[in-house]
Image (tube, rainbow, N blue to C red; front, side):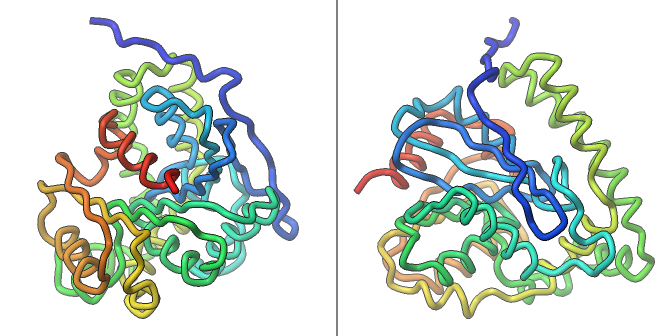
Length: 286
């Protein structure tokens, strides 16, 4: 059975946002007054949040997202002549918000983006209405002896970012299958494949290594007691991802919880209409 195609032409706008001497590629879609600032998961472009269009009526919602420098996407690599830093990525996110003049917004952080979303929610508490954390990674101490951490440590010592880039390009075959099922036209799939080819192996490695060796718990604790946080994780998660979601829930109080099925990437690679509706409804309802 052929997939039902969703026409994304004209459904989103692209902007190149100045960041010093660099340009950050940003995307905006939906026409509503309720703004949702969306932070991508490693190593994706923010463009893949477009999949929400085929699962939710965005007349009252406006999504703003962007491409992290050095990842899949069209942003300039601000780390070309310097070491990666999470603080620098925070500055990029703040530059995007400033460009659009957003005063109030809800925030969704997925995976890697979850840690940065927590930081933004603390630093901009007067502006953030709701916060959604999807399979968020917060405390690298929970996985110091895990196989993934050990592998990243070896790759980092050897400076084998090129190997991680090869892995990401091979993983695109899985993304490609999901894009087909979501109704992307072939031209759109080829475009995303070109974005994949632009990622920088060194930045990919430094960014994921940095996350696995960071602890954002202090920022998380500053959100304690908020009734405006939704923590989304999969019932099928195991190992370090399960430990992360359990840690987040222990540290917070009064947060809302949603359990879904599937692996770490399925929230957007295999989107469920009911899940997406529940998440967006949470972020947009007063």
